[in-house]
Picture 1: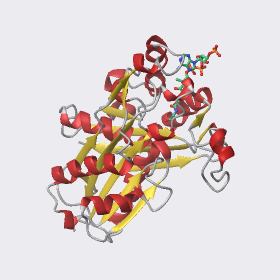
Picture 2: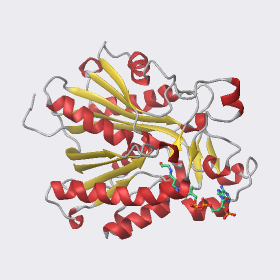
Picture 3: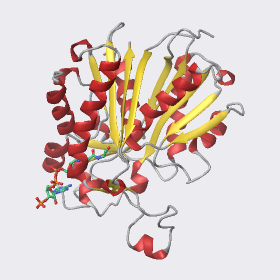
Length: 329
Ligand code: UT7
């Protein structure tokens, strides 16, 4: 193994379910408008998985594409990490379910739960495990079926989210975007800002919790908005600083795809021009842990990133959590 080398994303893939639901369709479900959703969020449409597509199925399709593009054999993958807040079941992990669906060997599998920052957290963990020398080739997936925890009577949340998955194969051998550095942080002081209160050990599922709609996502949008801009700016500056880089060195920012106004505010605060931000949230909405790999994969496939350029991936999510990753294409 090339122990002196940084890990690289030697394979990448993504998947979004076929069913696209545009804003006008949502107007049939809740009191909203295409104009409100577009001006407040930038979202035009989102993909919604079918009843037969749990999160592991979305993860499977993205993972197959990533492994195929890596050129590795299934038997060479020795670690699977899935970042999700919408696992198939509370346990076992979706990573274990994915391992079997892919036909992998009996390799280490676990989930990471860091909400929308989950994919970047998982990259950090996988890189550390590979750098330890104990694992060679890691499959890292961000996959969500957000529609499964949406309250379709709550217009303040149901218009925002969508389903999808993205996956990377990490290895020190082979070619692909090089992972230069990582930064993760969290503030657990106010979990109710964004949470799914029912179904855990605090509020186990009962007829009452279901009637009280506690199994759906709840969010204080305004507070999350303000925190998002603040923590994404600081996570970006912290990581750049640690690597002796300036904002001018960044050619591309691939931010968590939650709201175009959050991206615009981040662009202003970082003084990185908006044209350097890669966004596809108008098509997919907020897909939580899948949002960055869905955007990254689209940028890669479109040839948007040129060899040698520096990319900054930055996310925030429930927890609150935040994370940033630097790559060299
Ligand atoms: O991955 C992390 C997940 N979370 C986020 O990224 C969310 C961050 N927050 C946001 O993106 C924004 O706060 C929202 C898009 C959620 C909301 O935008 P806002 O500009 O902060 O709106 P608001 O919550 O201040 O609501 C403004 C008005 C309210 O009406 P009143 O009280 O002013 O009469 C809402 O009831 O907009 C109303 N409203 C809607 N109207 C039409 C809220 N949702 C809708 C809707 N359609 N879907």
